[in-house]
Image (cartoon, rainbow, N blue to C red; front, side, top):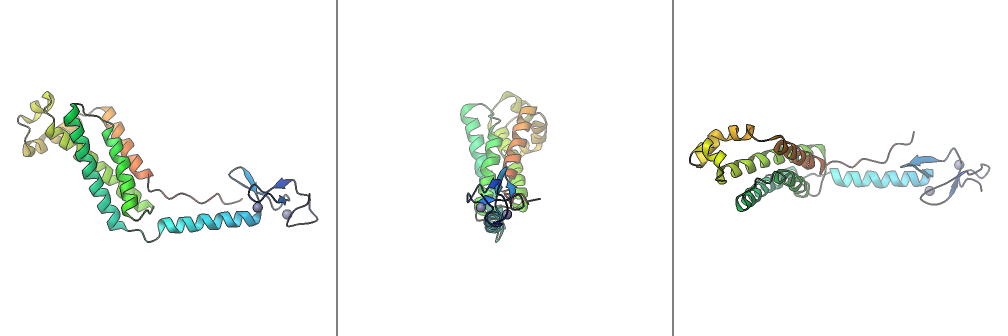
Length: 196
Ligand SMILES: [Zn+2]
Ligand SMILES: [Zn+2]
């Protein structure tokens, strides 16, 4: 079999995509598979269009608004669950991060980009702290009452930092995971690797 582009050359490879025989000079590796020049150009063009569609005309106000609303709603829902069950449910901050990430992406018009990643991470962090504040205010756990006395909002806010610093490593780990998740969701998916 000879190369589809070079009739005089042997074709030790076959294009993974169009199945045409190709020579050593025409062959490029893409994701571990052999690909011909024509298919490589098509793949890169499609990826470029996808990247454009994902990253152009980003609705930043929409992303910020959706992130803030999602953070507030998820924080409220999480604290409500905690009040109902009597357990802090640390993984709530992780779930909150994921929810916020998708909300920011959707609110921005299903767009991606570094700015949206940062917005999502900040919203997830603020949302989690808000969630812990609501949990702190609303759970009548003995530890809280010692710190707050009566669990009314003004005094609770005053001693809230003390409660935050008393949180364990698990709380912080799961909170960090949530922030990372929020940051990951609107990341820009990269183009196929440049042939060397
Ligand atoms: Zn091909
Ligand atoms: Zn060739």
